[in-house]
Amino acid sequence: MNDHRLSFCISGAGPIGLALALGLGQSGYQVKLLDQKSHIDKDILVDDHRMLALSHRTVEFFKRLGVWGNMLDYATAINSVHVSQKKCKVEVLMKASQHDLDHFGYLVPQGRVILALYEQVLAQEHIDLCLGSRIIPSADLSHGTVTIHQNNEKFTETFDWLIAAEGVNSILRNNFGIETFSRDYDQVAVIARATFEKPHQNTAYERFTEEGPLALLPVNEHEMAVVLVADSCESEKWKKASDLTYSAEILARIGARLGDITEVGERQVWPLTLMIPKKVVDGKLLLAGNSAHGLHPIAGQGLNLGIRDCEAIIDLFAVNQYPTESDLIAFNDVRRKDIVKTVGATDFLVNAFGVKGTLAQTARLLGLLGVKTLPFVRKKIATVGMGY
Ligand SMILES: Cc1cc2nc3c(=O)[nH]c(=O)nc-3n(C[C@H](O)[C@H](O)[C@H](O)COP(=O)(O)OP(=O)(O)OC[C@H]3O[C@@H](n4cnc5c(N)ncnc54)[C@H](O)[C@@H]3O)c2cc1C
Image (cartoon, rainbow, N blue to C red; front, side, top):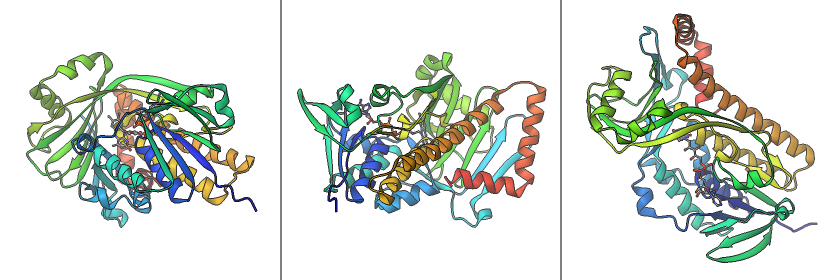
């Protein structure tokens, strides 16, 4: 009997690298987790109020990892989703209760998600977390042999599997020569938190306008995490915009349904790109999270899709410690299908609502009417939104 336990080297300790390390560590595998960041500052994480919409499925996964308990106190449930288009009378309100659910998912500050994962990683004996370190690109990587540069020192180790969880610009993915399809959206997301006069009643709003889409996601009782999408040529304008200008733009898009904005927080501007790699497994390399896909944030699906990458990788090695060639082909096919579907659906949403003209307006009206009147369409959208 072969007693060798597989070893993994994960490059990138963002939310996906941390979650994956935990899942593999809890399965009893030895994991080295690298990140170029020299340290993870707990105070900075506690102050990081950017919000992530976590689907029902992601929450279930976090429960399995044993980290959800440390996020729950900071979580706001999403009980309803309201979809509408400016200048269009048809509006769709989907309620979790109509699907026999308490909620569709939760909004949690990104810092709290990372902190909960990070603390659990520190407590896991099978994970060796190496901060301030990165892999040096080399031809030996295809054999699993990695030279790591850490604090002006270099050392070499060999692993059974390498996993790129380095975000969109993955060095490992490039080193293996995996081609990608990518497209710049020529748009930026201007994100912040805003407090409204009226309570949001745990409703998330997706609003499409000719100026660009807007997502408002519920936090606490009156606050909303705002994702305002604008053309990238306006990037500088939004970086410098006053609270008043930013609030006025949100209100111009969403209308009076939530009343006035009484307070607005610090803004951040993110460029938006679509990216799909030709494959997510190549020899000893697996891709996960933003190294495996880049998508528009309007539907809040990026991290949720990355968590499905984690689940699939953990399952691949739980079922079969040494996956066969056909296991890997099946893994690649299933992951690619999910990625193409999710990235494609988000892209469709952005484009379908972005087209100007009467014909497009009529098509959207019919689309919204279809969602409003056909229960099976609403059920399908709710199921997909929950990550299933
Ligand atoms: C405006 C906006 C709003 C969003 N809202 C949502 C939402 O509501 N819900 C949702 O599901 N998703 C959302 N997303 C997407 C989500 O933030 C990402 O999918 C998620 O952060 C990806 O995590 P990751 O760990 O794959 O990558 P990252 O968060 O990019 O982490 C990568 C890590 O790798 C490290 N690294 C990079 N290169 C190297 C290297 N060469 N060597 C070592 N370490 C390296 C970095 O330091 C970093 O720690 C949003 C994104 C944006 C832009």
